[in-house]
Length: 290
Image (cartoon, rainbow, N blue to C red):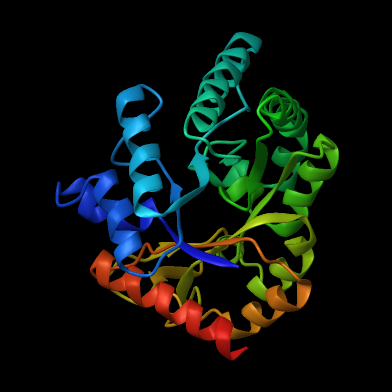
């Protein structure tokens, strides 16, 4: 088991210019992390080969493994031409992952921001063939490099454990698995423990995040709250300080025999470096105690 950090966790510092992605790598090494997940927000690599090479070289010198590359994608397009263009765009990122010397990536299959009518099971089933076809094409393309592609429980249309499995089983490629995010099930009002139990057998990488939860009829007031698919309230928390039963989930993962990368994600209101350090420390402590 190796604990690391998503670059997304330090996005606030990247956006303000306090840190670059190269600084993030060094920060992770200096604060006990073993790997970094690349989420290209606040910077881009696919159109900047010099920076991509610098990231690979910096990770090598800092002793930080590059564990996963996560990117948005949307295979639910209105025309065949737009679908083909999206597949071609994602393939460029597969080439980048190979250039970085990485073997694991996550891509979405639909847009992240969707209206309520696009979160229904009817909408999902109607557009499932496009999600499956796009994922098959990317998995087959990535296979030449020995890269595992994955779908995450991410984006309100494909966030529940059953819908993730529906796509996994339909794609039916040995190098197509799931990046399992323990917290994202809450965005569609699924108990994280249930979601983890169901999808853990398909997981090739695991995200740990935490949320504060308030029911739909108890508006929490000011702060970075957002609503779930059914109107409950969530706010990002430091891992181990929110309402997710983190210790129980750690026990489930350890009992499963999973021994791969574990990525801490932070998207709360606290200062991002302090919160990310605390989250990694908490998770390491829970792993040792459970």
